[in-house]
Length: 155
Image (cartoon, rainbow, N blue to C red; front, side, top):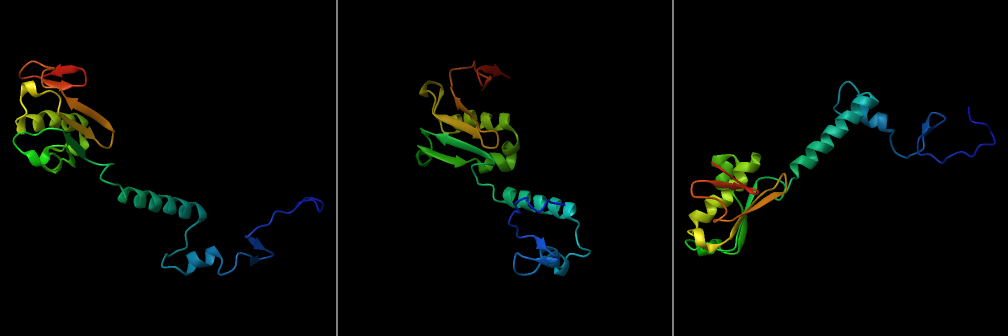
C-alpha cells in the first residue's frame, strides 16, 4: 500500500477496475481480436518484438544487402563509367550477397571485363553492403594469376 501522504503518479492505467485511457482496455482489444486464446503479457511482448523485427528486416534498403560495384572507368562499356550499381549478376550466379570475399573479388572481375587492363590503375571498387567492407582493385598489386584481398595476394 502507498502511504496517503505519498504523491500519486498520473496514470492512464486501470483505476478502481476502470480504464482511464479512454476507449477499450488493451486486454479487451486482444481478447476481441482474431487471436485465440488471448495471449499472456509475456507472449504478447514476444509476438510484438518478432513482428517489429520482421517489419524492420523487410524494409532493408539496397544499401543494406548485396554487393555494390563502383567504377570510375570502363573502356569496353562506357555506360558503366562513373557509376555505382548493385551486382545483380554476381548476386544471382555467384552468391556474392552473402559472401564478402566473393563480393570483393568482383572488383577484379569487373575491372578486366571492362577491359581496363593492368596499367590503367585503380578504377573499380566493390562493397559488401551487409558488412560495409569495401575494396578498390589495384591491378598491379599481385602477380598474374593471383587475386587481391585487403593487403594480401592469394591464389
